[in-house]
Each structure stands twice: as structure tokens, then as C-alpha cells.
Length: 311
Ligand code: URA
Image (cartoon, rainbow, N blue to C red; front, top):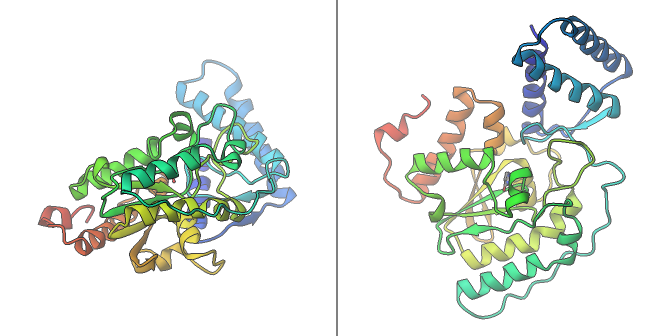
């Protein structure tokens, strides 16, 4: 097995564990040394001669994984792409109490504008941004039947200031298209309004409980304004944010079932990033079955072809 395949297998396993609810794993010194030896021996064997682009890609992955492992013994797992980043002491901050929001009277559009203004001018949200990052507020149809809630903006989103425009977002839109919906028909929100800062050169860090609690009133206010018929919680962070953190909760147990949030039925499913890492037919089918339930609840027409996707 080459180093890229082995790294991919390791990453997939970490993502699977995260999806199952594992939040921390311990790596002992010997394992770290063994991994370093493995990475070093691979470097030695590829040092001579011309490297194919595959090998040089492998080396890039290996180099970053190697330095990452040197820095960490305690790894936080998230279902986002290339994300094995734990909040370090430097990025852990003390946030003020969550905002108290009193939505003014008015139509949905006026209320949403008021809220957007609050979020864009939120001192805490702005102080948590990466140097070139923007706040990412929810976006979409204010009369949407369907409100999809993600975790937090990623690298692409914080640059554009728009939710779900990176690879996970593209996949989410493909799922919506398969349901017969367009991006413009739904509302896309996130638990967090900013991309959580961390001190690694790549990857995403899952939001802390404190960050989730701080931003929750903003998400709840968006739900209050949109009043969707159905909420879909994408992944563990969205689920924990909306239902409250429960260390015993396993996404594999709660997905595909109906819950309730703010009086609206809520479906839990895997985050599209999970599918990017686990593109097996089984994972795709599971997510698709969750969305079939959503379609049924929304009384959307479902063709035989749609019913059979990923079978
Ligand atoms: N993942 C999320 O959870 N939200 C985004 O906006 C993008 C990626």
C-alpha cells in the first residue's frame, strides 16, 4: 500500500469515527515515532530521480501530515474535508454572553435585513475572523419550505462571505438538484457565522461549545424569520447545536429520523463533507434516503428513478 492510500485510509477512518461521535483519540509516542519512521523512509525512497506528480502530491500530503503529527498528540476529528485540527490554547477565546435578539416587527425581508446587519456588525463575530475572512450569514429564500443547517464556513465560504460554495456546498446543491430543487428555493444557514480559527496551515476546526452557544441566537432568529416547514441538520455539529450537546449521541443512530426544533420537524443526516470522504454507494444511499424522507414530508412528487438512486 503506498503512503497516499494509507493516509487516505487513515483519514477515512478518522472521519468515520468522528461521524460516530468520537471526539478525541490518543496517539502514543511509539505510534508517532513509527509514523515518522514510515514517512521518513518513504521520503528517502522518493528522494532520487524524477518524481511523478502523484508521488510529489503524496510527499506534500506526507510532509504536512508529518509536521501535523509532530505538533499533535490529541486530535479532534471533524467530518469536514482535510480537517484534523484541535483548538489550541492560543485560539481558544473567552466569548461574551450570547446576543439577545428582539426581532423588530416588519415583513420577512425587513426582519432578515435587520438580522443580517446585526450579524455583519457583531463585534465578537468580527473579532473571531481570520485575517482575510468574512462573516458568513445565512442565505436563501425567505419563504423556503426547507432550511438546511450546516456547521461553519470553510475556506471558500469565508473568502466570499457566502455559505456552501466550496466542495461540500457543491455536493449539497447536487443533492438538492436531484430532489428537483434549486439553491434559490431553499435557505442555507450555519451554526457558526465565522470560520473557526486555528493555527494549522490547512483544514477546518469544528466549533467549540462556547462558539456554538454564542451564535445560536442568530441561527434561531433566522429560523424564526423563515419559518420553514422542515429543517435538515447536516452533520454532528448542526445536530448538537440544535438539539443540545449529548456526548452519547451517535450520528448513525439519529440520522434518518424525525426530531423537532422550534416547532418544525427536523431531519438529521450526514454532512456533505462526510460523503466527500466516504463516497461509497452505501453512504450516498443513506443520505439520499434521508432526503427522500424530507421529500415525502414536503409532499414532493418522487419518481421511480429518484427512489432508486444509489441502489
Ligand atoms: N460546510 C458548512 O457546514 N457550511 C458551509 O457554509 C460550508 C461548508
